[in-house]
Image (cartoon, rainbow, N blue to C red; front, side):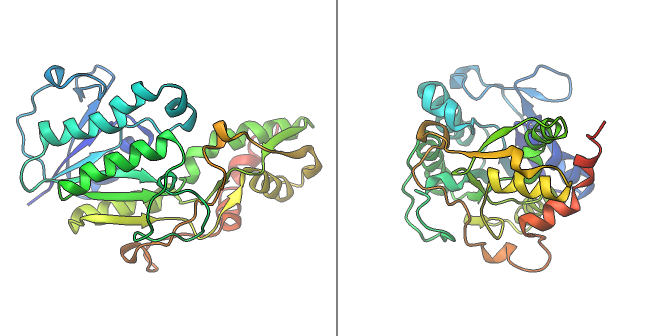
Length: 287
């Protein structure tokens, strides 16, 4: 029997990319969106529960892609983001989960304090910012309802526009200041979507970690890109981001990869390999 999957936030970066693959994988897809349209269910997670629409289906899986994941917004608009990240999660469970529904929350390494590399699912979370605190509270809601939490590091493609803008400046011989104390551990989008398909098919529950194999700062990554493009890497200057922007004192994000994702089926390359594979996207920017 084909699984019915509700994607909360189907127009989000992850939601729309997962939907494309999920349909080809044999899932029946339903979606919610803050944008009014004929195809999707109109829903804003910040609404009070009595405003939420009725959905007359029982779902095998609910994938929560809608959230506020920017550290800055969670710090400055704590109450607003809490409604989405925490109360929204609670209301999804109340409103749309049936007894056997697998509910999946995409979480973050910001539930940890960033002191240690390769933290495992057994490491005690110690969030240092509102994003981490809200995600941890949402995780507990999911786990108390026998769901699945996937803590994931940064998806490479979600940073592509940022790096493209910087590369354009380098082509124009402009100096750029880039954070040397903000690190990321890249996961290819294709790998992340494949992981979602697998955990839904196999009905995983509990906590799983999906991470790249290493951390690199944005400064190191842009230097690497500039060298591969034979641009003047001296134009890339390191700067230190404030704690309000970085979110915590320590910047390690890389986690110990959970067993379902640690085999050769899941492509988790080094930063160098990801950049090399995608270098043509930057070469095309040269006028």
